[in-house]
Length: 352
Image (cartoon, rainbow, N blue to C red; front, side, top):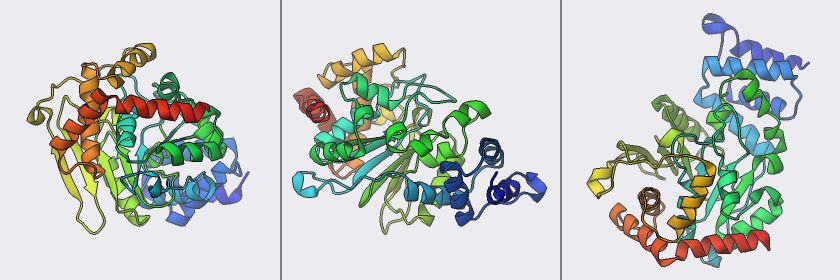
């Protein structure tokens, strides 16, 4: 048993009257001890559920990210001289426990962005509690890109060559993967699930994109990222807490840029001629039948969502001067075959 960890656990687990928040350094120390298994299983489980009940602060989440940055993997940004039109890497923070009601769009968004010269980095693991929805890694594998078999060095090569990368937690950050079983045992998402949405396993100039469900989470993002000195990010009240923009309601988006005030953007589907239908997730096999059709430019609800998301992110990442131009470009990239060509390029490098 770790006596030092026990004191940190006692601090957050003493209830509303005597409990205290951790400092940033204390949160970093606690996370480090959990990742290194210096805390016992009983201590780790107790910490996760106590922290969940208490609710994390921005300072605590900043400390947790400090430990992830110290112990976790980190890719280098691709060399801009290799043809990338945008210097900032778009890092998507998508909930690791996946989707179960609506079709995930972010792999299509990533391919659209990469086709336009925007480097994109994703991260995640396998099917994960508590939701146990379809994870991104399974979608990529179904599209012919199996990130699970690649070393981190190989991922860096693919990232440098194609502008797409994926940090696979079980292989590239096994210390973090070892904490996943606790999520099933405590039956609730621990604050790690919030912290992962802001984790950035990439050095250099980045544009962090984080999805969320509940509005207070966005406030945590803003405070945490301010403490960590990150001033280029996007928050999205997305489908099932993802970075995917909804079409059945107004999309609520927060935009932070260097030296500019935080900006709120509201996107309503009807203002741009889109329907109010979010494609449903029926099964993994059905989704993986539909996605290649989208990549070939075949009209469908899923393609409309790909254009809706791709167009917004093309504008947000600086490829297009306005959102309408983004929608036009996203559709053109799909219909012209440039997006499927990017997928074939990535698959060739990964499997080569």
